[in-house]
Image (cartoon, rainbow, N blue to C red; front, side, top):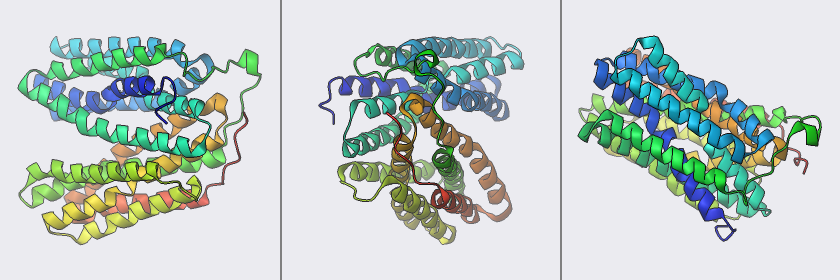
Length: 387
C-alpha cells in the first residue's frame, strides 16, 4: 500500500496537519482557565470552537469535492490559523467575552477536514478493495496515535512553559502539514465542478444516515466512557490513574486497528460494522459491576478492541456507497456525527455519576453502543457508487 507513489508524503503530512484536532480544544481550556481562573468560561470557549467545527465540517467536504483539495485546503488553513491567533490575542489581552467566543467560532468553522481528505486520497490511489481496507486501518491507527500524542504535548507545553506554547505548536504543525498536503497534486482526487459534471450525484442516505448514527453513538461512547473512567478512578482514590486506564482503552483500539488492516476479510464492511458496534456496547456492560482498578484496566483494554474495526468498517462502507464526486463530503458527515456525540455523552454520563455513582454511568456508553447496533442492522446495504 505504501509503495504507491506519493503515499508516504500525503499520509505523513496529513498526520501533522491533523495534530490540531487532538490539541486545540484542550489547549483552549488550558489557556482560558489559566488566564481567567474559570473552567466554566474555558468550557464555553471550547464549546464555541467545537460546535462551529461540527456545523461547517460537511460544507468543507462539499467545497473540497467541488473545487479540489489544492484550492480549498490552503484557504481554510490560513483562515483557521488567523482565527487561532485572534483567539490567543483576545484571551491574553483580556478582550470582552464575545470577542473571544467569536474568534473561537471562526477558528472552529475554518478547521480543514484533513482526515476526510487523506482517506479520499487513498480511495483515489488504490483500486484493490483489500488494500483500501488496509489503508483505512492504517489511518485509524494514525488517529489513535494523534490522540495519544497531541493531548500529552499540549498539556506538557502549557504546564511546563506557557499555555500559548501548546497552541503555537498545534498551529505550526497544522499550517505546514496542510500546505504540504495540498501541494501533492499527483495524488489529489479530481475536482467535480457542477458546470462539468452536471447535476450533483445523489447522496445514498439510506446507507450514510445509519453510518452517521453509528458514528454518533461512537462519539457518545467516547465522551461518556472518558468522563466515567475519570470519576471511577477518583472514587477509588486514584484519579491520577484515569489517564493510564484510558490509555489502555486506546491501546486496545490501536492494536485492533493493526490486526484489522492485516486481515484479508471475507465478510463485507456492512457485516463488520454491525457486529463491531454491538460488541462495543456489550463490552461496556461488565464495567458497571467492576470495583477493582486492575479488573477495570483489563476490561477497558478488551473493550478497546471493538473501536477501530467498527470505525474502519463504517468508513469503508461509506466509501463503497458514496459517489466519488461527493466522497469527501460523505466522510465529513461521519466525522461530524462522531464529534457531535461526544458532548452529550459526557453530559449524560456526568448526570448519572452525580446521581448514582461512576459504575452506573457505564450504562450510558453501553446503551449508546447498542443503539448504534440497531442503526447498523437497519441500514441498507450499499450499491456500488458510480465511477
